Amino acid sequence: MSGVPIRVVLVDDQDLIRRGLSRLLELEPDIAVTGEAASGPAALALPALADADVALVDARMPGMTGVELIARLAVAHPGVRALLLTTFDDDEFVFGSLRAGARGFLLKDASPETLVAAIRVAARGGTVIDAQVAGRVVARLDDDPPAPPPVPLSAREEEIARLVATGASNQEIARTLFLTEGTVKNHVSAALRKLGLRDRTQLALAFARRA
Image (cartoon, rainbow, N blue to C red; front, side):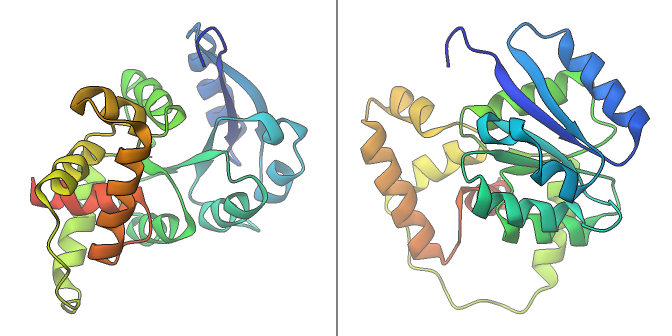
């Protein structure tokens, strides 16, 4: 993606929020806001979605929630990495977004630096987990009934899983460990299968829990 700005679509029913996010991101030379929408249906109708890299999606919107939109995006535009913008008390939306295929979530009051960094991580294929929200999710998981015991990971699979939890993409992990991207992808897939997880966001959350 060298030389090409990260194309971002903003989806929030509050005009003031969208304008603020757009003006903030316009200051970044490697990020371009290519579309905005005030609702899920309007977002799905945006031509810009076809070429977008990242979608910032508000959790609470009338008509179609952010979770519902993310699920639709996963089918209609699987190349778009969706990030859920949530408030501190939106745990149910966080769980729902993970199941729907979100690449992560962060608080709406995150600092500009955190937001920009999250977009860059997601665009590279990494996973974004706000530390405060992750703590609440981990506490919720601790209250859930115990799952069947997972198959132990190999030392290499665990090493790669811990790097996934830092937000690193397959390319970055491959460079760090002197492996091919294909090898990293195979190890990630094996870790997901052994732990009974659906995607790398759930894997990152599982290893954030162990930190």
